[in-house]
Image 1 (spheres, rainbow, N blue to C red):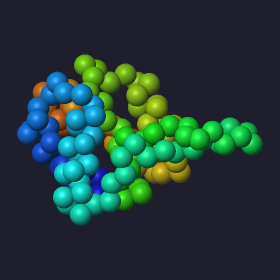
Image 2: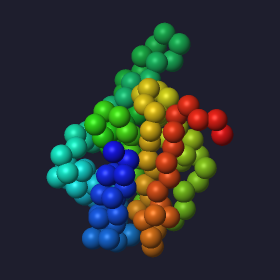
Image 3: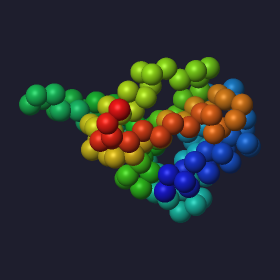
Length: 122
């Protein structure tokens, strides 16, 4: 499934190019994935449980694909290490294994895709 998401991101990036708002890339990527028959939830609310308190929503995942992969979309000059840590936190809180951090503000989309796996040692 990650391969399909990466391929869809490539298609969106080659069609639209860099320099747009994250919301534009989110909508276009969701559309492209749905066209391929994948279930996509946009701005999916994920609750956070802190001690015994449920904080809802704790955060909103940009895209959740097939209830398995969290896709965090950025349109930034550079991705900071905290963005990778943020996605890892989302994966842990949502109890998901795989996340893709996709920065569309790059010349080549392959340079903007980072795969984050929950449970791997650093």
